[in-house]
Picture 1: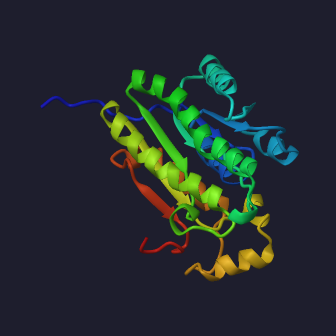
Picture 2 (picture 1 turned 180 degrees about the horizontal axis):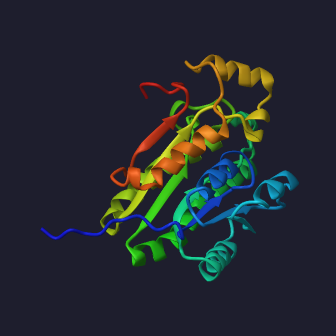
Length: 252
């Protein structure tokens, strides 16, 4: 029987995290920077000063990119491939919320969230997958949410996109598995980030009360799971949904 070399990329591999300027994305970039020589994060408008300070002493590079733009996605990958190696690791984390009850949700709130959280991931993956197929290696992680499984009042648009990532990720996993490209999905619950804080303390307390572990996760806890999924230790895992929710969606 022929033995196929399915070894992971060396420490010279490039890891790309979209929406990496804060929260889960930034924590993931810092975590991956310990194991990979080149880590790239994207941000949509301005890089927060606190983030610039954090990455200033690391091997993390920051590139502005709006994932809603085909042109900017193409420019992003061109720059990564020109400056480093191809992005053998891609974490699709960019996402926004425009919360409101359906009766009050306007069309733009629906369109903006889908354009960023779902179509933006489609654009990212379509460009990322080409060099992965050529290299016969890739590790992709899509950042979904517990909201995609249990729903969340006032977040129908957000929940729809996060549920959509599951179908997207599992379909892609089947398409590219023969090329040694693994695609997995993480589904965080309540995480201590700016996005969660925007819900307000009362709503956060209500949500946390439904978590068996009775607390929010730290971004670093999510980042460590993502780091595992792109590592050699997870080389036989693909098409999986990994809940990181303190038991919030247990049994679903």
